[in-house]
Amino acid sequence: MVKHWWQEAVVYQVYPRSFQDSNGDGIGDLQGLIQRLDYLQALGVSVLWLNPIYQSPNDDNGYDISDYTQIMADFGTMADFSALLTQAHARGLKIVMDLVVNHTSDEHPWFIESRKSKDNPYRDYYLWRDGHDGQAPNQWQSFFSGPAWTYDAQTAQYYLHLFSKKQPDLNWANQDVRQAIYQMMRGWLDKGIDGFRMDVINMIAKPADLQGATQLPRNGAHIHEYLQEMNREVLSHYDMMTVGEMDGTTPEMALQYTGFDTHELNMLFQFEHMQVDADPVLGKWRPQPWSLPALKAIMSKWQTALDGKAWNSLYWNNHDQPRVVSRFGDDRPEYRVRSAKMLGAVLHFMQGTPYIYQGEELGMTNVAFPEISQYRDIETLNAYHELVDSGRVTPQAMMAAIHHSSRDNARTPMQWDATANAGFTSGTPWLAVNPNYQEINAQAAQADPDSVWHFYQQMNALRKQYPVITYGHYQLLDPEAEHTWCYARTLDDERLIVAANFTATPQPVPAAAQTSDRQLLGNYPATQAQTLRPYEVRVLFNA
Ligand code: TEU
Ligand code: CA
Image (cartoon, rainbow, N blue to C red):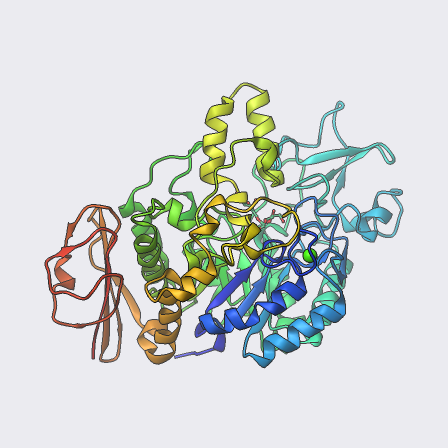
């Protein structure tokens, strides 16, 4: 069996803007993160993935980079970054940076040059096309609402941007672009970072005939060529981990992108399970009820298809997604802690590397700000204006959808304690704190042995002790059951059974979990009783 350190890791995702402010300006920063490293070490995670911390005008909170070699002034300096790296490594924590190279900011020097003239040496760093009859080159709509092309009067051409118009797409067909990116990557790796999470990396390869294309570009013809080149020129020279963000990939594609012997990436984030509650047309802005058999089928398909050939990344939420306890669990006070633990266990006992998004270990919930003016996320604000101003969605329905789906659900500041602004800042936070911080916060959770925090800590500790948690084969045992999820993991003579109740009503214990196996972990006192209590999870072990 092939084994790598990143298969045995637990990754903790830090959204630096919302993690810890150290200087009272209301924005989280690197010194704040350094202050919290002991907390992360105590939780027992092994890798920190930081959302982008490079220089940026923050049209999309750092995903619009104007200088890849500088730290965003709001977050600190390069000296702060070096201190973070040293202090993290001293605690056994690796650092993974976000790599955003599908696009840059329109304020990046490359784009400032590129837009100057058609014969500028940087012109071909981006994707410029003529319009026809005063119209954009094609009908593509950006992910952040409105056309994916913006007209630039200076040279009378349009440039492509799959995201905001301040995020022009790079032209990966240009080998100078690729070499410049590889050089930048080497710079960070030589500084000592331990890996990259690669933003929308399966969108970098655009079709040769951009104008004629009808579908937004994903998994384009040259994508494997580019990733293999990147691997050859950069990745293979370092002891590092990579995870590609890849919406629109299937397990079959993952075998090529992340196969143990394909020399591309180590892991990818698939999105199929993030779509179980979306409308076919309006997507997340018209949330739909979701079904547990559908969720189980997706996760189980990935488990089975990759086993022995590639490696899953396991996540329930991140900075773009709603909080999992509000989405797949039950965030009412009586069930929040139980359902958050149940979801944690169901995810962490599957095969793959688990990713914890900041605050998930506290059971942090979605937020429901009453006014659109309280939101900061560009995707949310643009969608509100597009759908409400055109009359397609009522303001009430849109606010309800935002409360369910907005990216700001995940971005409210980390809840550290019950003092003003949850201990996140002494100033005014850039995005308001969730009003439930007096009850839900790290200090309270660390003081309570029954908290979600201690449960996550226990899972992290068990992973180090039982190889079956990392390497065991997965088998779904109750595909049809509507309210429970039961699966097995096996490795040599070791077997784990996980049985979970996804509802607030008692459910029969799935047949496979009716054993005398020892309970390794649970969110109720252990019992042989034949019912799973509300949101109960049992992890049973036999060797
Ligand atoms: O997200 C990619 C992406 O596809 C998002 O638009 C996603 O579909 C959406 O947020 C879910 O509603 C990545 C980053 O994670 C995101 O934060 C950035 O805004 C985006 O790329 C552009 O860089
Ligand atoms: Ca700050």
